[in-house]
Length: 145
Image (tube, one colour):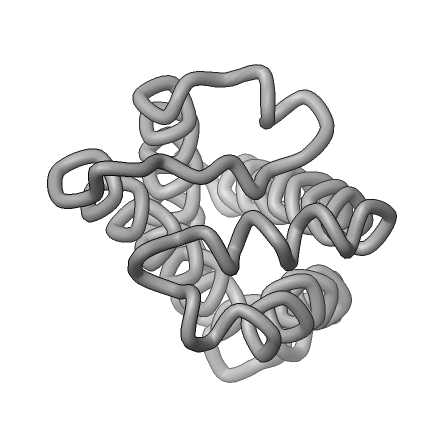
């Protein structure tokens, strides 16, 4: 694949992450009380629900801003991939080990089952891996223009 196609694909995947994380963060912030209450019902997160309720949307927005800055994009793709991996691991843990399955997602994501949400996350994990692998090697020194 030539360099221009690689750059275009990385840009499209980065834009998809921006859309996902901005949408997810704003949905959580718009209905913050519901998000915090549902996190409090999680058997895995209830002790940390207040901190997580602020941290997750903040991290999602920070990743969205930084992934748009070419100087940081390569490294922030790793952060986006890692965040999706954490979300996916949480879903697996809830599905396998929890008697109660809380629903802290908002917007269109709340209409998904947890299995569908896991598949969705794995799709974004795959996109993140593709973007990292296709990122132009000569520009990993933070100079993609």
